[in-house]
Every structure is written in structure tokens, then in C-alpha cells.
Length: 366
Image (cartoon, rainbow, N blue to C red; front, side):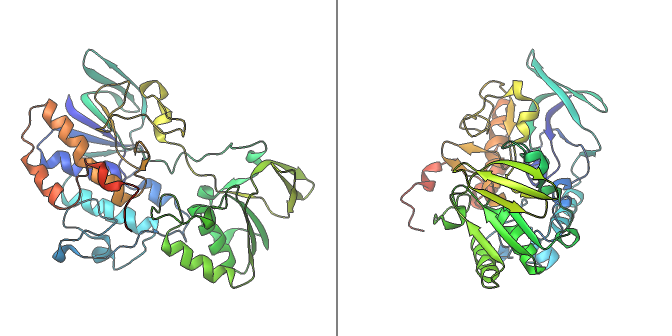
């Protein structure tokens, strides 16, 4: 029996695995496909909105690194990485440190009894004292946000925008993935209309989890200059209907829009924790309720790492954010196992150990 089973071999799973290894805690990482599989499923044109830059020599970590003294920018010579490139970075990190990753194993169910977790997997039963859920979100798109959403295609199901046929498109959702889809279609000479209930492209907030990133805003300005992109705020889609060879969209205000091509749904993603809902309590926003140490409030010993981590109003959905919680989780497990936590000092010195959330206050002079 391992001390810890980590579920998921993406950025969170590989990253927290490195911290457990530094503490000499026995663990196994179970990945249902292959390392970095969510990134491998990105549309071919999608890029990281957080820039990569190698600053290790000056004490500054690459924003997209999940391991001390590594840099995707240095390894791959790219500032805004593709999904394939980042998956290769993760595979390189896992291989270099010989992490115990077992690919092709899916977790089907899990129960906690008598102080141990019992996992039913595609490769038989596994047991452990602790479980870290790091299964991500990208493979769990929100497919049914309104009536008729099944008539749309979710942006995460697009292999490449170059293969999408048609000249005019409607995109439902105006945050990062929706605007990214629009930008890539406009580059191909398409006419695009983006509909969003709140007009998220208008938000002005220092937190890129709330407003568009500078990288996206810059590309959006260029796309708007072509005259092929229309942004419609206060247009929350209520239903989609198929009328012959066209699709009709009705907003909550009662307005109708038509498009000759299948609408593109950019509605975001569910937390993968909802796969096993009996192990978590959930917030109003659908994310798991967590203790201050990112532990399930209903299942002791079950921790969360990755983009679904929320602490009150703080959103940890980017790699440079949720990597700062790896050591918080590992520290809790180490203390309960009575393991020396001295190796975590390196993580704190490298801004990869954020346990004081007062620094994320509203008075930040960004």
C-alpha cells in the first residue's frame, strides 16, 4: 500500500508528485491516458496565455514551470506554448526524476473506510492512506448549459480550426477560450460573432482569472481591426434550435440570431471532482469545498491539486497559481506521516508555497 495515490498525470499530478518525492513519501501517480493527455487534446492553434520566460538564474521561476529549476521556455524555446509542447515538457520532467507514473489506468470508484482509501481501477484495486485528486478539467467540458446546447460543438472538441468548414460563425461564451476561438477563425478569414451574457472582454481586473489576459487582449485588438469580428455583450443565450440548414439562437432578452454553421460552445469546464461527487461537498460555483489545506471537507485525507482549487474568493486556475499549493498539500500529508518537512523550505524560497492568502487582498497595488 502506497502512502499516497495521485490521480492524474498532468501539470498538477506531476508537480505535486515531485514535492512528495522530495519528502521521501511513497506514492504512485495514476493516469488514465498518458502524461499530459489534456494538453494533447487542445485545439492545434491554442497557446498558453501565460508567457514562459527563463529567469531561474535570477531567482524567478517560469510562470508555467511545475518543477524547481526547470523552464518550458528554456527547454522548448517558446514563449506561448502549444498543448503538445507542454505535454512534452511534463513527460521530460517525469522522466528526468523517474516519477512512478502508471499510464492507462482509470479510477472508476473510490471509498474511504477504516483510515484507508480503496480505489477501484481498470487495473484492479489499489489502496493508500491519502489520495490527491489532480485530474484537471479540460476533459470535462460543460456541454449542457442551456436548452439545445447539444446542437452546438464545444471548443474543446475541435482538433484544429483550419478544418472547420464555413465562412460565418457564432461563438457562445466570451472568456479566454471563446475569444481564442474567435481570433483563430478570424485569422482564417472567417466572419465571427461572439455572444456573452456579461461581455467578459470588457472586464478590467488585475486577476487574469477574472478578466482577459494581456496576451489575449492584444490579439483581440488585432482581430477587431479586420472588421470580421463582432462582440455582443448582454446576450446570454437561452436556447438553440435547428431550422433547416441554419441554427437559431434565442437570448434571455428574447432576441433571435441565426447562423449558417454549427454554433461553437465556449462554456468552460466542470471540475473533475464531480466524477466522484460523494467524496466532496460543492460550492455554489460547482467547485469542491476545501479546508485551508485544500482537503475535502467531507472526506479526510483526500486533497485537491489543480485548476479547481478555490480558497474563499481566491481562484487558483492557472499553473503559476495552483503550483503554489502543492507544498501546502504535501506538508499536511508529511506532518500526519511524521515525515521531516525541511525539504519544503526550497519551495517556500522559490515562491512555490503560498499558505498566507492575505497577500492576495483587494488592496493589491497592481
